[in-house]
Image (cartoon, rainbow, N blue to C red; front, side, top):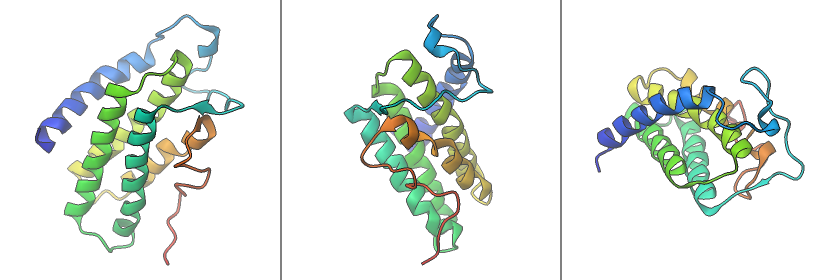
Length: 162
C-alpha cells in the first residue's frame, strides 16, 4: 500500500475518530473527565499490549529522529518520511490496540492531536512547530501507560544538541 493511500486512509480515520472521540462512547463514571479536564493519572499505570508498545515505540523513534530536523541536520524529505512513519504507527494502533473504554479515551486524546500535527508536518514540512505539537500530544503517555520503551522524560519538550 502506498504512503499516499495510507495517509488518505488515516486522514479519513481521523475525520471519523475526532467526532467519535468528542462524543461520549460509554456511560461509565470513569469517563467523567471532559476535553477541558485531564483524566487523573492512574496508579499503577495502565498495562500496555504488544500492539500499543509497537506503535508507540515507532512513534517514539520517529520523534527522536525529528530532533535532527529541528537542529538542521535532516532535510524536509526525511522529516516528511518521519511524519509518515508516525501516521502509519497511529493507524496501526487504531487498528490493532484494544483497550478498556477509559484507557482508550485517554489514548485517543493523545493520538488525534499527534496525528493531526504529523499530517500538517508532512503537508508543510517548513512548519517546525508541528514537531513540538507532536511531542506535546504524547508527553503524558508515560504518566498513564506502563510502557518500558517510554519514560517520563522520553520525549522532552526542547531537544538537546549534543
